Length: 511
Image 1 (cartoon, one colour):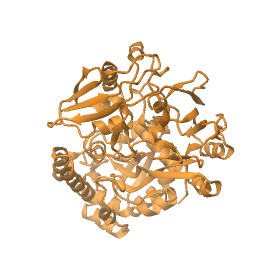
Image 2 (image 1 turned 45 degrees about the vertical axis):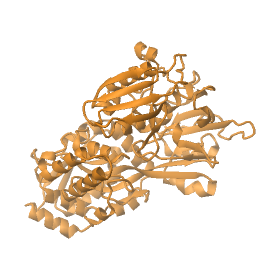
Image 3 (image 1 turned 45 degrees about the horizontal axis):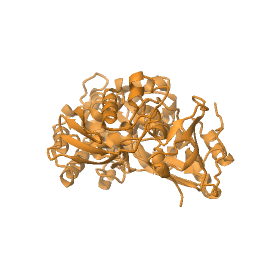
Image 4 (image 1 turned 120 degrees about the vertical axis):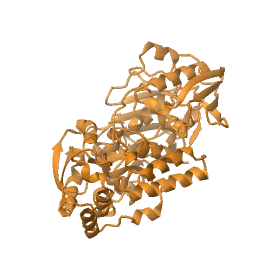
């Protein structure tokens, strides 16, 4: 198989959640230790989608938004929410009210004080947002209890609201800026930086440090420059030349790291494989995939570990699950359930009545071409002939779910209940008809997860659900791909499952 830089593979996930080479023009990335000045020049893969947190994408927007906005809570890197503007919180015994205590020393860049009324206004705005509303589906109302306390009232128990808020769905905005409707162009938050007038949209964003920020010591970077660079070579050249000191990396950069004294951090971020969208066989073309034996045959036919080495250059995890490797819900013993066996795959198809195979049409776009030949070869060995409908990458996300299956590179979540929601139970653009009606066992286990008490009981229910969807071949996961970050020796980055590029809070100085 043809090797492809990991950068091109991992970047697909950003487009999945959202969906000319140039060098960074930032200041010299070298620091002046004597004066305490620590420049941070970031090479991000994509431009900011919007400065308005209600419209922004979680994917690559983390560095941009976290510079100018403070969140109520932040992800600790492992899916757990930590305090930010909310100093602590308490969940009521009936799980229907979350009470948060707020900081009293935060100030928006327009001079307005952050308080409970401002928090409620931002939360109501986020709840109505096109993208940010995903965190607040079960919220009945927000209440300013007093000047520094808010209450979030839920219509039913919500095990993921704090997780989504921590991923980037709780940024607080100036009430006046919300009223003015200008946030998309001019961010007004209480963050550690403000967007500089010297910024060049789409090319280089410069930020001015807020000296009196309540957590100024946590953000020692000055100046801060973020440059969107979708070219791996441009980012690598920027790192080598001293114009950048943190980049969204690929294997070429990682291979050079030791000799250059760079730091590399990586962690699983996306699953790669075939997404089934017609598990009930409701459509004529999707009829074969309504039979579990057909889905099991495809799982058995593809050699995921080999694809991990050949296409992702080994940067990832050889697992057939949608729960991230090493996290709650992922069970190592399931990885051997569909050991590659083309003869067994043929037998399964014959048992399902497709001994001679069948024909299927699938969508294709340029970024997925590294997988195209393998898919044709493997399905061809099963007698399954593929016709490809060609699309531009920008159209793939809208078109792919209309086919019974498609090649997918989909972002994962660090919270296991969020995985249940986003991958299995709740309709998403990539899973418009989850098909729970196709399996009483899957439906029963999904219900069990949402009914179980958080803790050991819920973990057991999640693990049983994973066993069930694996038995039912709900997905054909080939492997999980890593996100990779390469930095100069002064910096280290903590990857966050659920984002493509973590926030500034996850970029630290090496002590």
